Length: 469
Image (cartoon, rainbow, N blue to C red; front, side, top):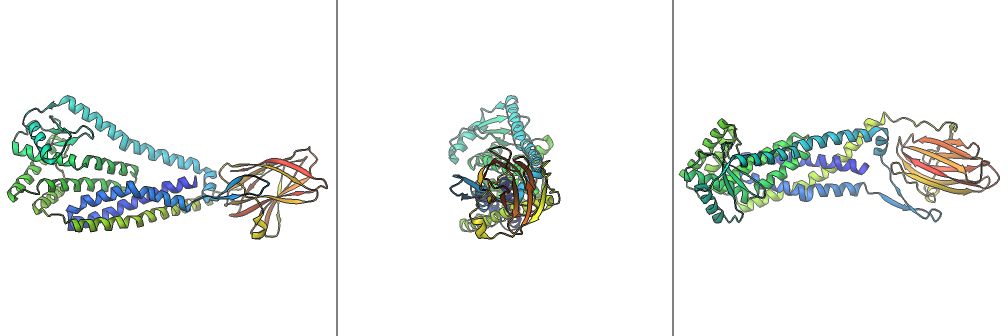
């Protein structure tokens, strides 16, 4: 669970940092060269899906790698030696807290993404039912433009009074919706070329990828700003591709068409896929069209390379952020860590032993300390002898339960000691009628050794379990 927590926190922080860094780049581009905004934001999105999340997950897994220690021949098995403060947090109610947080996140995510996608699909089907396929000029122009632009997919055209302005829909079966009153050939050619450019550039798929990315991080304002800016730069990129070979007078006419469509769409309360209701954004969009600055491939390549080179640094920062978040949660919950209640009838007392050296610990088999791990005990101890049966790396607040009994009967007289190897602090409990049960809570983070002392002169054979919670 420790790894899962780090994954969630690290990936979430990583995504938020990437969005914030990308928006900083966008802010600079808006004042320098807006034409490069769309390819750079696409590069950031591509990085997130292809490298960002996978690399962050790999780095987290690498830093929380579990080590496997072979035990001695007496055990004939391997157990995992693993220690984490997160486990103490989970034992004290963390499962419930993380579960609630996850459910809230999942619910909002489903409403924002799956819910809206379902609503959009239903709206599209409804519009198709209430619209009429265009079989005249618009359909003929669409077929001709598709051939000229090298688009093999057949794109249908519908006329609908629900369309406030022209817009493209459909990921697999593209459809262009046009207002019923749009009949002028030049206007039709301009808007159809614009929408076909969107389809050819895969803009619908890119926007959906960014929308999914933002819905996964719905709690971060930068994600939604990123989505808005992505759509804005996408429209600018499409305008520039459509007006690249136009004369200045044609560009003015195209800009005027944008303004008219935005105004008409606003009056009809329709979808403004072709224009924006923000005057400032429309003003910037028209300015870019009239400026018509060509993107230099070398400059674009350098900018994309610089941004992509910055992303691994953000990835590493996200991974460290996950660790720091884990540490902060541990500190909050540390004050709530309480001592486990000891098993009734087997009172334990505090004693003091000598601290143990690394050489003393080397020959003691490790105990599995995975959450809710159960380890079977089967050990024989000679008379008046003692034996260190297990060692375990426990963090403060981890609890352990021991249940041991004499396999031969009820005459065994033995003592169990749980010793902090570093300080020598010891919890001791004695058997009653050949059995013993005790609870133990680690007061400090460290290595603890379980020692059994045979208080009788005859050998004893003990069986039982050790449970880590």
